[in-house]
Length: 295
Image (cartoon, rainbow, N blue to C red; front, side, top):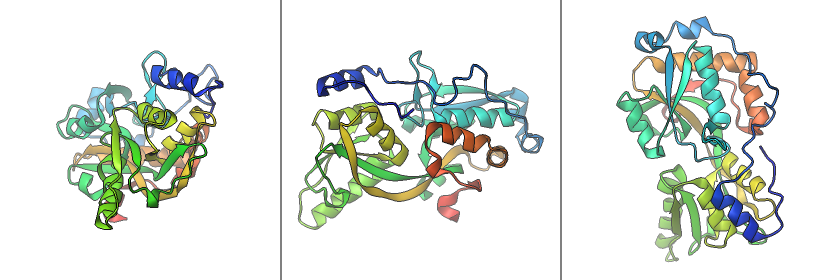
């Protein structure tokens, strides 16, 4: 999944990004046979009866955040987050059914019972825990990127244009906080530019429409790889925080998801998926619940 675009010019890269024609092949899984995952009966026993009897795990996701969750050429959700959701379902003896929606509609879908879980690179925060419970499965930081040769310090970005995907943590919290600090110091605010998809935010930096982009670390690293040598890291990774699978509060489903994921950690399924996608640096050994409040 770290394949680079073999294109020589900025214009060509822009066309590729705007058309969405990225290399969406799944790394390390072109074996012709699916990964074999055994059902974990202990995890199954924890499932709420309504979910167990349905035979299906309804998964809400916004597949616009490569390589975590995005779409293949046929429009089907793929990515390492999608593979983890599929493996969770398999551990629970259920069939995964993905319901694609905008990011900010997923938690309401969980709380409203339209989906069982939300799997879309949710940063577990205390504020979000007021609405849902999170089963923590990964740690990611924030990582900025800028155009190659344009050295930018995220801590000295006053007056710059920064691209973000709308409704992400970077959009709602991180960049606004930096901008407010700039204003408080008598400096120009950061001009935050929102995009519906991460591809569009990345493309804005490539085209020079934004000075930098801010996204979760695996997403930024993927964007740099996908655009060849057009982007570079800007500063170090910071604000490392847990990702969580969103489930209804006190629904009983959190414990089943936790057990399924822990079984995947213990039998190597979890590490296999992260290794194949090149994101093993964010792996954790113990699956927890609501780490933001309990960490």
